[in-house]
Amino acid sequence: MNQSTKYPLLFREKRDCCGCAACADLCPASAIAMKPDIEGFLYPHVDRDKCVGCGRCAAVCPMKNHPAAAMPEICSAAKAREGRAGSSSGGMFPLLARHVLDRGGVAYGAAWTSGMHVAHRAAETAEELRGLCKTKYVQSDCRGAYRSALNALNGGRPVLFCGTPCQAEAMRRAASLPGSLKDSPPPPWPFDRGVGLLRRSLAGAVGAPCQAA
Ligand SMILES: Cc1cc2nc3c(=O)[nH]c(=O)nc-3n(C[C@H](O)[C@H](O)[C@H](O)COP(=O)(O)OP(=O)(O)OC[C@H]3O[C@@H](n4cnc5c(N)ncnc54)[C@H](O)[C@@H]3O)c2cc1C
Ligand code: SF4
Ligand code: SF4
View 1 (cartoon, rainbow, N blue to C red):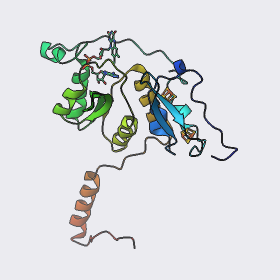
View 2 (view 1 turned 180 degrees about the vertical axis):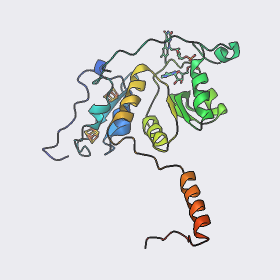
View 3 (view 1 turned 90 degrees about the vertical axis):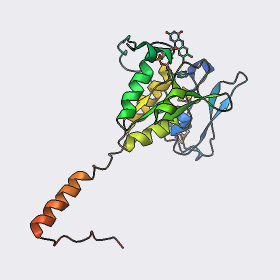
């Protein structure tokens, strides 16, 4: 890091960091590593030599940036008994997630890993969704999930991101940072239709597109 670079102070005391890993996931210089403390809770460690002082880590942090307005409280539960049985508290998560999957989207939630850890994973099928259901009473490792969800959003796909309030707020902030969401390209059908119209009106005079050298 350059001497004049402003080095980020992510937290002074452990209670000021919830270990959501959004700072590490979204650092453009890969300067932040999440390391477990003596109890196994993850905390960020900044490599000053890699840090470029962009401030993205502090901007995405849900502990530094509390939501401006209180969220409305919504209480709901799945009507079908079998929908509730596979979940811990009313079965709204799989209901909402299926809605997103049915529209070609991706659902993110906490899953057990093969090493008996808990980490946030993406589900694109009903089978993968089952692994995300039910509460896991340990901290979920979100590394990679925010970035993956942003990629899905940038690909024009609907995304459901479910986690603890701080993880959800980190995801919301990540998606609202300038430059996080790029305009996705338009769907191909208007172009195809335009080419079809031109071909018909110009009687075959429309050729192949020019390739840049
Ligand atoms: C650590 C923890 C403690 C909780 N304690 C209470 C409580 O005291 N009282 C109460 O009413 N509700 C509590 N909840 C919430 C509740 O258990 C349900 O998970 C939640 O309401 C969703 O329920 P569901 O039936 O819609 O879906 P479910 O299928 O039960 O929930 C699955 C979703 O919960 C998320 N989730 C599960 N485990 C974790 C985790 N470790 N970290 C982050 N996200 C996770 C997943 O991302 C998944 O998307 C707690 C949740 C957690 C994670
Ligand atoms: S200031 Fe930028 S480069 Fe430095 S740790 Fe934070 S996100 Fe990474
Ligand atoms: S973004 Fe999350 S992990 Fe990083 S400092 Fe803030 S609360 Fe801690």
